[in-house]
Amino acid sequence: MSGPGTAAGAGGPRGGAAAEWGAFEDNMQGGGSAVIDMENMDDTSGSSFEDMGEMHQRMKEEEEVDAEAAAADEEDGEFLGMKGFKGQLGRQVADQMWQAGKRQASKAFNLYANIDILRPYFDVEPMQVRNRLLESMIPMKMINFPQKIAGELYGPLMLVFTLVAILLHGMKTSDTIIREGTLMGTAIGTCFGYWLGVSSFIYFLAYLCNAQITMVQMLSLLGYGLFGHCVTLFVTYNIHFHSLFYIFWLGIGGLSTLRMVAVLVSRTVGYTQRLILCGALAALHMLFLLYLHFAYHKVVEGILDTLEGPNIPPFQRVARDIPAISSAVLNTTAKTAALAL
Amino acid sequence: MAAVEEAEAAADGAAKPLFAGLAGVSISGDIPVEGEITVPVGSRSPDEDYSTLDEPVKDTIMRDLKAVGKKFVHVMYPKKSSALLRDWDLWGPLILCVLLALMLQGRSADSTEDKGPQFAEVFVIIWFGAVVITLNSKLLGGTISFFQSLCVLGYCILPLTVALLVCRLVLLANSGTVGFVVRLLVVMAMFGWSTLASTAFLADSQPPNRKALVVYPIFLFYFVISWMILTFAP
Image (tube, rainbow over all chains, first blue to last red):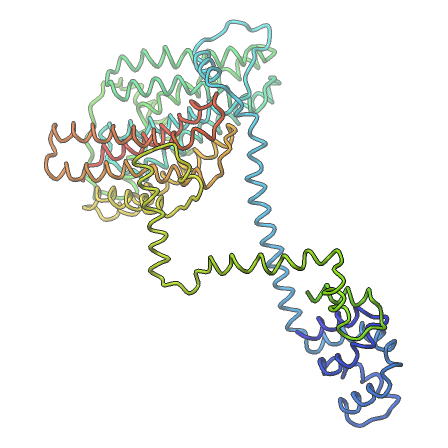
């Protein structure tokens, strides 16, 4: 403790002030001067370490100033080697802790500061959001010139959260056994998984097909495309008419899909590329709506049943007049989707 | 102190005795003196004023409880006041959140394995939702700090907690259609109250042309919570 600190202190006012500090030092740091005197003892040939050293040092204080200055460095190293090892280790550990803490803090701060990077994508007015929501249902038949896509994330994010809420609502009003925890997590996972997953997938396809679109634009396009899903599901979860759902599915879901397809077509060159890109997007988007409407609860319950065994009584569902073929197809798609999820 | 003395001593040179530097400081009144004078006087007195080391534990707890209670009152009478924003704390939100989660947990009391997720999910929904709203308002250019917003959103759950209490009482008395209508009215009123209170507190910190964008997630957040309360049936 006292060794390195005072040694450094002694090294400070080296020139003239060391003379007046010399006596003070002798009293204070016994260990330190002992090491110094090991050196000096060779000339004096004394027997005892410290007493002889101290006497010797008092005798020739004036001459020793320079010697001490030279020895201070050695003393530093030697002293640390012998006695200050523990202190040095402690200091090293503390230093490491401090470094790690600083890194963590700066990482958290960077994360929080990264909000500023995202801020341009949230730079919208309420009117703009409303207009974009409306436009997401209006396909424009202009494929010769690239259509404009707003690179904005506020609307998509809010639509995804709305979809999560609507899904929860649907699960509760249907005859599903309420397991809110599981359902909540599944709803969030499904919506965000679809939005991010399909966007990345289509972006990858677009990269392969040489379409001019960025990731943010893709996220925005698909996110606004979810508006149709939100409207459809909100209505059909509350009004249980089957024909109504099909009308909504083809009408509203189809319109929002057409809009996205039109945008992608206008930004892609070549028939094959257009077909691949738009076919993938349209199929995924329309099937996702079907999946959410019909098979969502079933998947969740199926998972729960397999997890919890036969203790749970078979759950009562409202009979729906799904055609046998479509329900079979849906079940398989649902299962594959569940496996994929 | 010591550093200044040492530096002074070094500056004055070798000729002077040991405490010559200190004497020089006190007499000469050079430039560094000003800093030396103000520091100990200024720093000590407020420390002694705010020292809570030797006060009874009861005082400490009561002071915090009073602050929390005052904020509850602010939420129930949402005036244009910045008390909720100025000295934020997360005790009230924590209390409300735990209360809400505990009371909502009663639903699946018969099947024991469902208790955990229920509590955890209510807890997570509230905090996750509040964080999302806060981040959203920051992204839209709001000038409110992170924890201030969390504090306001958490405290504004209070009307919904009251609604849940009323709902449980109503459910005890009458679980038929009349009971449902009463619960619906109570929950809707309290939902409106929560939303209005939180927007009253948070709206000032937002750019005026984007208030609708900030209010929408708040609306959704309280809507989900109030809807969970409404559909709750033990």
